[in-house]
Image (cartoon, rainbow, N blue to C red):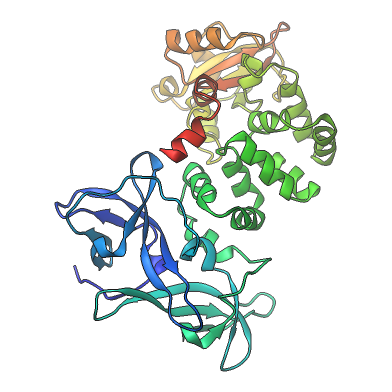
Length: 412
């Protein structure tokens, strides 16, 4: 590998960090700099590295021996595994500098920061010396991109409101929802809300489902009511119901009124059940098929990207109507069984007659049910024999773990 003395920060994000023995330490998540008086280039203090259990630690730049195109190498020695806490005077390049509004000195035109370049000096120190900035573009077109020196723009030393977040979100685009939620919690509160505001509804819905309840409520409260309702519609119905159950009655009712009627009705049905019962844990959108559906149709349904792995593990066969609460529940078919049968076979011919859960079944009974039958999802059927939803194993674990387990995981 070729060691570089110049690097753009967005390209460092996600790079694997190795110790001198070649063992993997973690991944780069941000770069910490100290802004200086006047136009002096900021000094790079170190890297924020995510290690095991998503703990984020600080690695001083003095420990970095090489930055290669595909990896960062560290010198020997003991790493301080204390969780990274941003100090006064420190700035996160990805978290706080990207999307900042600046003005190009030569032309006087406004622009926003899309990347920052760091460079190693002869003394071995690293400085933030270059910026990639983009001018506003016409409708449907990107503005002109400029590579400029740090001292060729103004505006970075001033506190700013209304900062965009598109570039930062693009940097995080490869993260799954759980990792994005952790990244969001590491940002300063102001920046956290700006990023949430800039996410599309579907992405924000996925991320909200991975945040602690208190943080979910805070972020939802920063959105306009119509946008909050749109995000709730994109959430899994059980997650939306859990979130709405924590709000005041007047706020909950208002948001339900703003949601699409079909989406709101699914959530209202779930709100009827206690949260520590099968009904309170279930989703109202499992994969439901009619008795005349073929195995080929079943396999096509579970291939859909938006269906979680646990819900895709089995399909449920019911008489019409096929929306919950359905017509009479007939049984379930495991995908593993379906894969062993001809595609033209009817799903109703390979059903498992496993006794379903009742909506009022308590958490202890649900847990025993999953353990007894080695399941990752289970049907929930009401007293009229209608399928009302399905409980997945991730929801069971969520209720078995302490209420603050997500916050504990973030703190390591």
